[in-house]
Length: 319
Image (cartoon, rainbow, N blue to C red; front, side):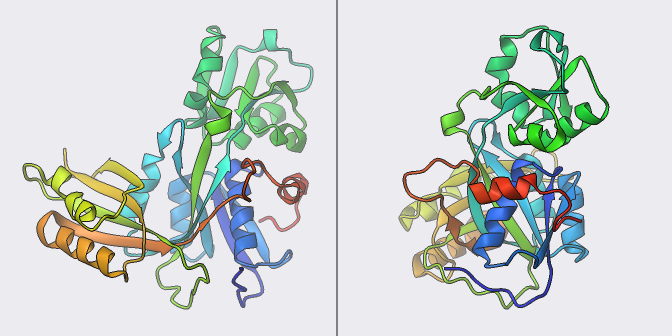
């Protein structure tokens, strides 16, 4: 079931260039919200901090962010940003996208020509098995997978390649040198959140099953990290995600970022959260209770034909 939004044009930001895996997630969020073609624009953004700034400044309406990869782990910068803007933003929806990486080069470049490989800092460790088979490659971090492809094509780098989705080769005019170079492509998924401003109060979701995300600033006492999880165990609430992130400007102090199935209005959840707030933390912030959009049963999380068509379009619905 979809929710139809009553607005002419919606602006959905994502980190990276056109063709980024974040764009695929953004497209899924758009369909889940019932937004029709022509009623939205996509806003590619170079960095996650800038994406949050645009959302808070109301320059965009929603932001699609990567939060965790099943191979490379959590995207810690986004947990830090969620904490920084925890009073201003809320999670609306979650989805997952399967990540299949390819090695892409400018036209005419052979594998034997490659000396440098560019990609996002989260993508490089997802392909470290392939990179270790080519010790002469210099792995270089870039701000985005699709952006890396765009850069080497536009600059005509004859000694360079980029790691990104194969569709980026079609978009930017590159050539795929090696397909499926990820460590564990079958199990390589990235979870994405769609964020909105907390002031967007009218939103009502039709999905009955929800997840909740909470940030817990751990008190600096013996055992509080372990003890903070006990109230959830006592209420038989499974913590599906548990990430420890350093607190800004507080050396060796941390915020515990947890996800769990349930709604804060459920009695068991309410009891657990109150127990944690009363005894085990200096601050507790609920940053969202939201539905998870799964892929169709029995399918892998590859881009749909509709998504691939959108990825191929030039200039339509793009800021």
